[in-house]
Image (cartoon, rainbow, N blue to C red; front, side, top):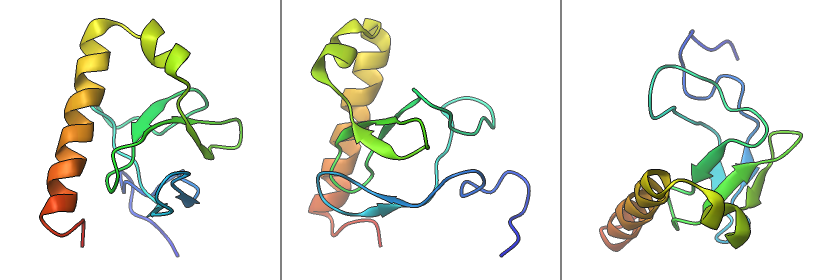
Length: 95
């Protein structure tokens, strides 16, 4: 399948969330049109688990030590994303 430039699935390997098993197959940048790379942070849109992209762009559970090292502003953004995932889940999920 050919993807259009800027498609959120471009450069993302489908991977199941290590917590809920939801298959995540797309990623969007907070700013700009960047594609994920090793060490980038994400949040499962279904369960809100904080994730980090591994060496093969697989999604791994973010260690608490990494979260605690993040700037406060980024910690707040991640917590807001978790809250949005909880709200979506309460309303019936993503789809």
